[in-house]
Length: 445
Image 1 (cartoon, rainbow, N blue to C red):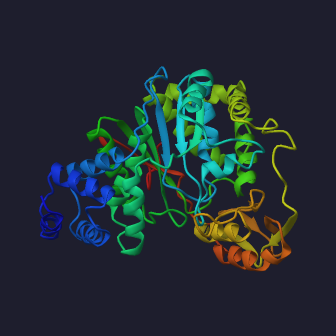
Image 2 (image 1 turned 45 degrees about the horizontal axis):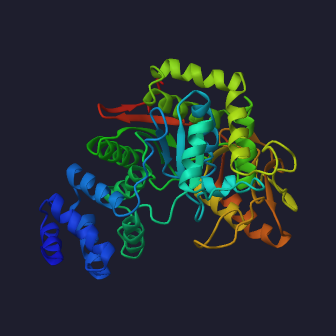
């Protein structure tokens, strides 16, 4: 078998055999397939595509390229949740404790943020002393004893994906749906969960900008999960507007705690409660309606908030996460005011995320510095009426010098109108092995 024959085959639009895909991934990892050859195959895939079986084979081969977590020691059905990323997306901080409090174990490996999207690990590390680097024994032990463990991804989790992602970044092949789907799902398969709930974001602050592309990606990932023996469902959610009111690591932890107390922004609560209910449904806790009731009970009775405290204590937090000393406060706070009077008609989430990054809340490079206290609190969002000079946001940072550029970028993100804007719902579609249920434009959730 030769890599040049495989490249030629896909270039001509033919289907690759399972053995050929395995040969490619093995060669990529052992060095017998060169990067320029892998780049040629990526471009052929980008142009010609992959069918569902090919995509599932690629995903499985990438998952097997490194360590495969075995969670069989943890009793019960293990359900994982993955978000495709967005601005203010702190759902794991809420969903994990809820699901664990309701009796479904959560053993989750999460990533760090890069650019305008935040990472769960960075958020948790804003809590003083919180450890996200766990040994396998600690990870499994925490999940067994308190029902939840959240750890950073190991360096050997789907290493083929790391190589391919770097090549896609420099060969203009990032936006291929089969390649995106296989990248996401290879890490999910390697993480060892029995079942998977996907939160596929769509809109200005998401990787997929249109609803149709987001649904296609959701369908592709659900198909991969099913073909590789993992029950998988997807919820397509809106990211035209940041989720919740807080953007930035410590600020997002504080907002997640508000939701676990039963307060917090309604949009964040809506998405988190839906994801948690879907996870509980896959975990065998009943139909989705009864699972929504379990979610609300865990909030009302305080068991989800208590579970977050157990997680923090177990993973080394110096203080309970709700204590005033648990997280550092920003040295500088600055109010941004509305330049016009009218309704906020739109908010470009990506620009808001980038403004937060300029304040220090995100990384420009993989190993760049991070200010856990930095970020933005949004006082007004799409659909609300504001008067000129009224406070619409609060910037948190370490230096006054970072404010002008961040403020200018933030204001670019806002659109104003004399008319009340039409807002689409937060939850736009649900995808499982049976097909797609759309809630937009006819919202009937």
